[in-house]
Length: 493
Image (cartoon, rainbow, N blue to C red; front, top):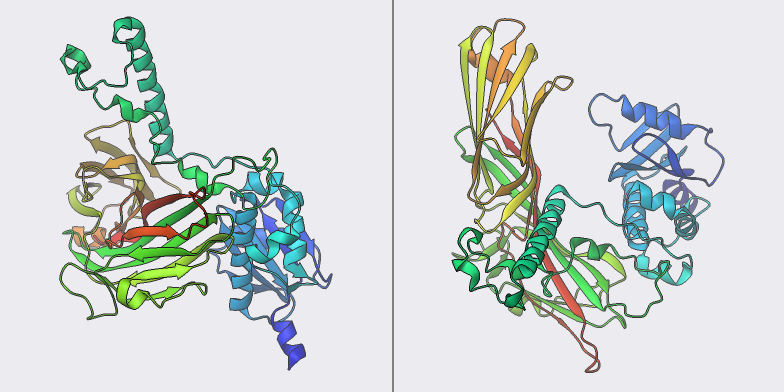
């Protein structure tokens, strides 16, 4: 029985492939699988109809993989291994690589390949898993990480450009009006006519209560050029919610749920105990809620979390492990306010002409915004051409018809809360349509992808994060961020 269990958890090869199929990392543990499986795997996955499953068998070889940021992390074996065991192993390996490299992308893996091979030698021995915890591995890893900056999103780039432009404007004002001296207090400059209300220019400098989003991508171990002096004691908390929503053409929600997670990454010295307090009006279990409270259908916690104070005071106590980890995962199926409403209208103007109008409204508060909004709408299979007209036109929006995938793609880099945008698609068909009902079956469903920073739908909040301080000089930084993302956000026609 022991020998059989050994085969269930053994892998023969492990490799990391780039989005183009290049082998970045490769380790053959047993030599019992034929050479060239990386090329065979990539060719099979690339030409698979639809999305390739995470596990498949080809010519007697079992291929198991996970995909992260375009990279393929693949394990192969000749044996009938436990699929869930190996997939879990691959997911833990990607987490460990990210913890030690800071960022998990192709450039980071290539520049830190020596570090990655060192981690791999500690993770696996002859194809058998050994250590998969960042905390356990840290004392065995000695290579320094080469820090790679995380690429900025389109919204972050816009903010940076706006800050640079406004700082230039402040410099110009200082030159033009030298008698103003210190421009820290600009609240009284509203009477300068065309300058308008520039009382908020002072906020363009970095707010001491905020940090850049890439601050969390610091490696947990030593890095090149880092002497260790001046390192901040910091802890980052992310309340991440992924939405699954199905709505009809009238904007009415048919089905919805929230998959949430409280993720944490600790850079605290001394491993102090933390106390994380959530909403006092938090209820767990269906039928347990009261009006105005936050109701979770179910939740689970990290193994280090002490729940003795959770039932009465909604406080989680724990000593954070090294690296990134999930303190709590939860699920909500109760009704909530969807961040977007979509209203599609289809009109057939002639047997060869169809007009599709999409009206999208952002239902989040006006002070919030959604970034990198991508709206896709499949078109009829006999589509010859599509012209896109955005109403009103905006430099932050673009729309195109992708003929190879027979769908229209509408991209909005920044969608302000409370705003409404329209897209008109004039579709020309190569064959006449029988009727409008048949056309509606071929158009859609409309899918939305987005990310909303500093906003969450469930209203789950962190009341406070307390750290047991051992001496007066120990004053760590605590950073909390809320992010809402789309998992599957669909509007049926």
